[in-house]
Image (cartoon, rainbow, N blue to C red; front, top):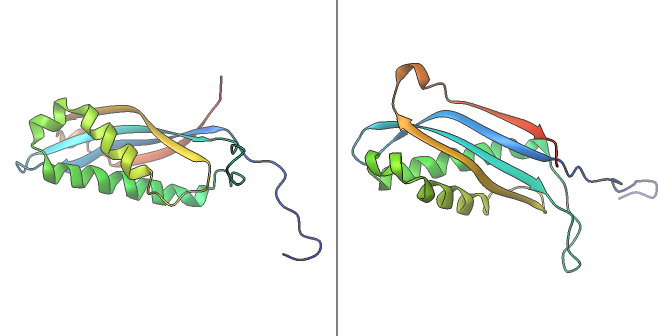
Length: 137
């Protein structure tokens, strides 16, 4: 850092939703299911025993997307389609565990807010994702 450089004064603490829609997952029994997933990303100020929070960086979005898709596909290899259709808890646990290894800024915590799994439908397979800023209550 130079003599006249400044640290950013404020950290953006707004929650964000990562929304993945119609992600095709090949299950263990070679059937396709579509997964809709919403992950709430929250940036929290550091506790006394932690360093400062780096805040949210839009450059992390690709890493979060990659982690979610990879976890879903790995889970599909290990589970049959009927288990994926009813086992949302297993999906939540796997994605949240994967997010702990995502290369995001300090203080960014991810938790799964919504999961829906449905049988494959050619019209529903869009493989679309988005990030939305969510106002905090």
